Image (cartoon, rainbow, N blue to C red; front, top):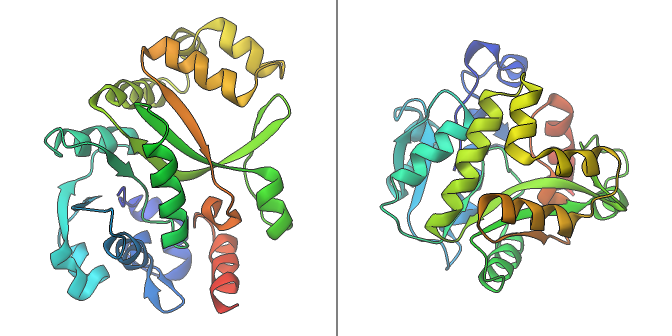
Length: 249
């Protein structure tokens, strides 16, 4: 689980007056604890590893659950933290990668994603929810949607690292992150053909994953989740308000 904060520059932590985003209470429970509890209660989840800056933050956020997790030091970015954490799992696969701001993560979401990932015969799976699924339940939610031809999807912060070969995708993530201000580097990473098709709206979700699979020499597949709440994470104060409303209901 990626749980690193943004330090003093984190607007969410500053807004709520907490030292670290993962300590933010959501319906009275620290956000990090909510996600750890969901993972801890699931029968298919084994060891839980939390990537965070300081191990001392874990008891403050988790209380009695702190003994149920393993600490790994976060790095300078999310992609680097994911890469470092995967190197620490001693090649034990599959690995579920998620984030500490996934405050609505529950057993039903985990069941669906884990079962679909198991049945995919893929090296990598990526959890997504369609715009229709999200907006039907939360019409006022401000989400970022990626358009693949007729498909509009939003990420769900759930990734299935099914085999060691999926490390190639994490390596690509690090490359893209490091070169996000260099368009030519991004073109080299994905290929001009894929980018032109994306920009012109002529690439579907399935074909995008097929192209990425060929580019990385792995098998990568999307997992569409039928749960609007799977795409709701807490990045902004209005996200926190939405989650509190959902939980109170």
